[in-house]
Image 1 (cartoon, helix red, strand yellow):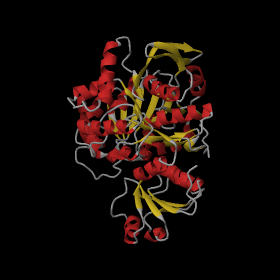
Image 2 (cartoon, rainbow, N blue to C red):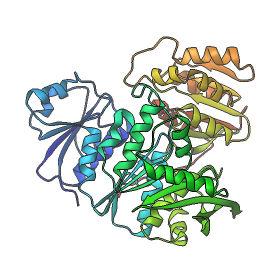
Image 3 (cartoon, rainbow, N blue to C red):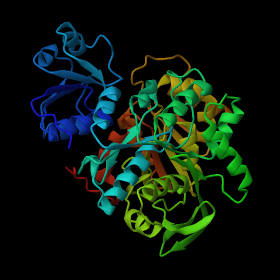
Image 4 (tube, helix red, strand yellow):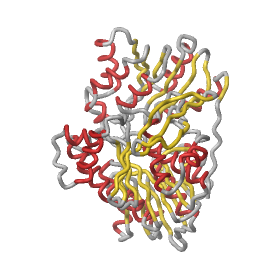
Length: 480
């Protein structure tokens, strides 16, 4: 097992989902840990149970540390970071430290892609735990087991984030790519530059798993993929196997190719099931945790991973059928008046369109845009996606690391939706209190109230819980 005994490590930006998991990993493996963040949050309050957490910038706290780990969101002039460099204390960016940790395990399973990384990583971890595999997992969201599982050093399961090419710090045994969309226009100038990074990530894995659609994306972008002969071979195989569905998943292992695909759907006692095919051979049925049947490809990816480890579809189904999902991913929290209240991390037009398209009934959406650069890059797409709701309440943009970009904020979005989409009513909420007040006043007019966004909109959940007719609780515990 990974050990950090006799090491004193400080984490700057410890309140992030990934950073908090890494800090806990070091703590539970014997390290002397401290952390700092801009402000207190639920995550930092949880961390305070284990080690000291400071708020603001305190350069003196790094002076006796052995190394400093910092989030990619931390600015170069951070006072703690500057002091560490003055003292020649090693400073390591989060993704490089994650790569360092991963290489302490026998095998790393890295889950990459624009959307769905957290859900798939959590599903794989859930399956491995149910199957009794010796593994550990680093998850970018809160599951029933928290965001960290430490139960062995044979397999390490982790998300592989594309932000600033972070995923290239991993050298996985199994590299997984779920999908490709340009979600970070502040890091990539176009789709081709993103594809090159993703293909490099795939090639770094001994075994690669990716969707059949990826080959078409490469071809449509007129990208040179001659050096990646495996993908060319897969494209020919997919074209020849005309019975396979669009959501097919390709596995390359030791020069061999396997294609997993989904087939017929059925409902059994309220649970959706999908028939699964391995190279067009029926392998069995698998339960889908998503009652809207929107999880077919993600489930196929998880099936392909667990099958590579030697498990049958029957055992995989038994392992996955009690998966409860991830907090803030299509999370039903209770009812308010006559509406079901759902929180989701959707912050890209594709995600917003997906969740709104999968729900029937009158929909009130509360949306908080995440970063000005993303809003500017996909301004028209956001307008179109949000128009799938009956009413939109727009909160102020969560700028994260960015300064205001004129014409790319929430108010600009509200004005454009109001001008172009007559059927969708829209308003701008100045603050969280005004947002809650408006939601309460509208609670009986809609079937669903959806809170969407990747910023601090999730904090509204605490404000809403005391007002709900009934509350859906998910107990969380760290598994170490």
